[in-house]
Amino acid sequence: MCSACGFPAAPGHWTEAGAATPHARLRERFRRVQVLNAALAGSGIKTHDGGIIPGIQVISAGGAQSIVPNLDALWGEFEKRTGRAFDPLDL
Image (tube, rainbow, N blue to C red; front, side):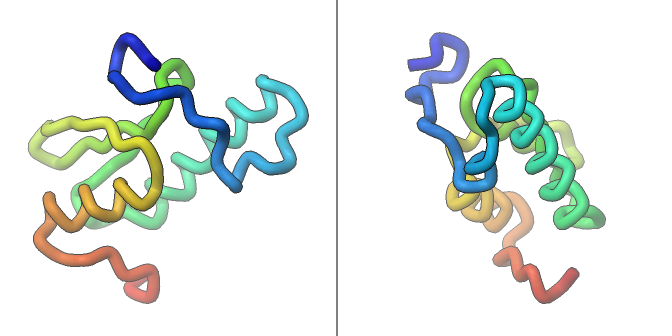
């Protein structure tokens, strides 16, 4: 359990499947956030992963922040903050 956020340590996300070392896994986490931010561009929502705590930090345009444990929770948080569901076909 992470003492900073309260989330249990995650075993890894499927996007990290090819990461053979902890360094490679961290690099994949950072890449995932880059892709998420590109997909969320224009919505007022940004994501961040500092590489220290498990989960994804979600930041809204107004500065509200929260940490979600996975992508499913991220889409729920997106809907809660924007009032609409995330649709990847809108990209």
